[in-house]
Length: 214
Image 1 (spheres, one colour):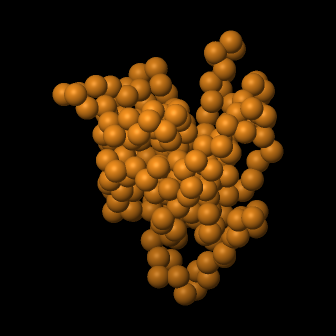
Image 2 (cartoon, one colour):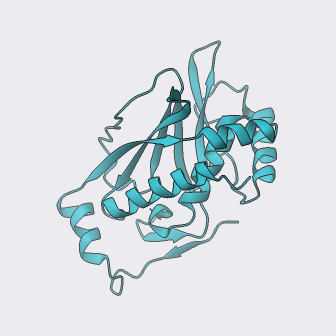
């Protein structure tokens, strides 16, 4: 079971930045970049696994390396960091053209994660509801728009001033000079995550995709 560790704001070095971007000037931002997934796609196929859970696994692996992407506010509004966060992701129902939000417990073992993913699909994948699987608190978000590629993507969170987990959106991959390229948009809250942290996440995702640990 995931553990939530509260942060003592009185001793937290980031307190001034946190207060400014959470209360004085509430600010979220997004960054979109291309990620070369040629090798990750090939290795997923070789392993007999689908690309989407492979990408979600890689994203979750990178997200869980850094505490700024594992932060959230609990029910009492207290800031803290989870020891592990699980990917909550979208699946599409072709018949109704609606989507559902599912989540799968993260494991650093690729095959174990894929097995857990398949079990979630078997149990919940055909349920046409917004969130068919009972939710947990330690989630971050991944969504997929496989029908088009894009060079920029941004969500407008009208009441999301205190929503701290990252939101990652991937689009349709495309071929470029013999390589497979995936657009990836990362939306974060500036209270806990600066441009340096987002750029590092993207670069580490690129590194993972070039030599995926499967």
